Length: 127
Image 1: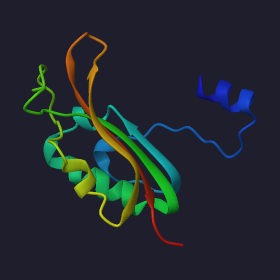
Image 2: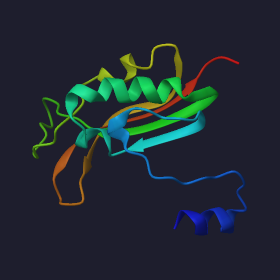
Image 3: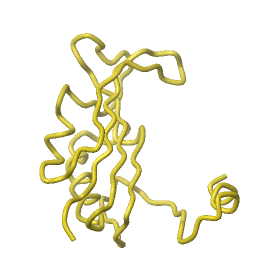
């Protein structure tokens, strides 16, 4: 599907690859890293390491898009996920980055479970 979109949109330099996020060992630097609905399936002890690794391998001016489930007072997580964010937790890990957009909104998972998600779009500062 990605290759179809790349072709249809005439995009250049888009390379899809499989990566074991648990390893937290990116080999290259990237302009854009998307980590949507993935952190919540990682061992909670490794999430900080994964985020630090992604940040270290993002080019100056590059972006991160992260979407992750939360467990909040108003919307406690109804499924036993290995990791969930708490209110305000994610922006703290992006000090020194420009927060382009951040919100914590209720949403619905594919199985109908209602919970809160944190969505972050951040740009790495620097030259």
